[in-house]
Image 1 (cartoon, rainbow, N blue to C red):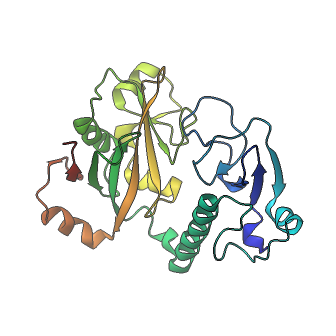
Image 2 (tube, rainbow, N blue to C red):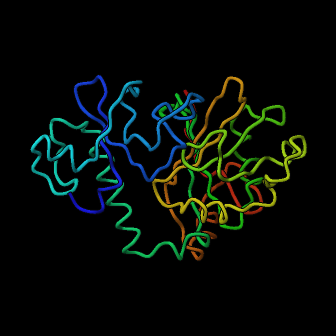
Length: 260
């Protein structure tokens, strides 16, 4: 296998196929995203089954050799021994990373705008809301718009994170009222952090996610997917050409799908 695949390992549990684990993703996520239970290092590349408590892991290259799989990298269809969903998601993730490297998008992140499609976990097909934000949009502005279409208010403790982060959010940002109550000065007020700063931390690009978890005792979840990226000269035109549903100074809800 190529060097680019050495970050992946194969996790063998009780199922009929093995799953792919991305070890570069760290230990922040598990397949039951937002779960409070301990999770193994790395990110499982699909959500089609639960992790087996007595799993065994082997390097991808070793698994390929043992099973005489004739593959160089993740080209083509998945071999029968490996989960096809994991295989497809891994192939797509590597392709996206290569595209970003070729386009040198890292220098643009932090200066561009986004269309964020917000969904509630468990109702993603029935209801969603698109929010257009600029790099200067504060997280407090984004939070106000998110609260507008949800049932959230100042009585709901909530936390934003990168991808599927939960209590271990690396953003360390809280809504202003929650920040004052928490008294932890290692966190940052939402009004003092911009979308551009969050984007730089997470290298946000099309297809990436942010998460929102609230009511930590019995956690519920919203998340957004970056559906579109806007260059600085495009952003004003996007907001001018659309009848916005609700807006702040630098952001707006521009599209929605509501339950029938």
